[in-house]
Image (tube, rainbow, N blue to C red; front, side, top):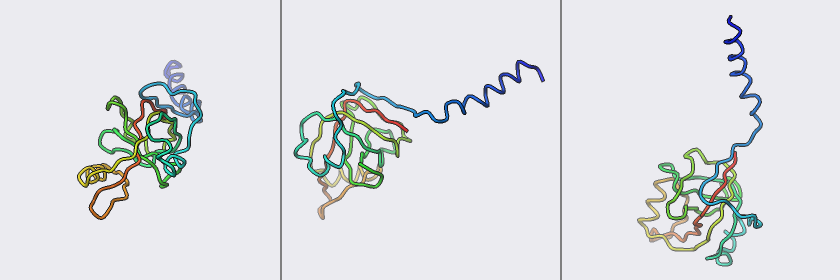
Length: 151
């Protein structure tokens, strides 16, 4: 075998092993500040305390928009209670395979009531909502100006 091809083959096979333990990081939107992070569980437990103020959240992506990556459900742990995160001015999206990634997001918390139609739309994209008898849902949401995702 030609030594040039043998060297290329060895490099091709060894390179993934060199980077196997590294964490992949995905950054979207504005850079995050260095302020202390608040756990998603704290915001979910007391959303009115954090409403309308900028906060840095940490959690895991429990689910996300399966069509575009235009929102994510951020929870303290997989399958735990969480909040839906959208992205400021529809300015960025997350990867479609982001489910399960650890996330930090900076933005503003809000509490609102979704109409029956809004609730149905979000559920069709994979959102987990607790709906009232009339089909509406009270939602704790978060508009992120920036996110950092890690595998």
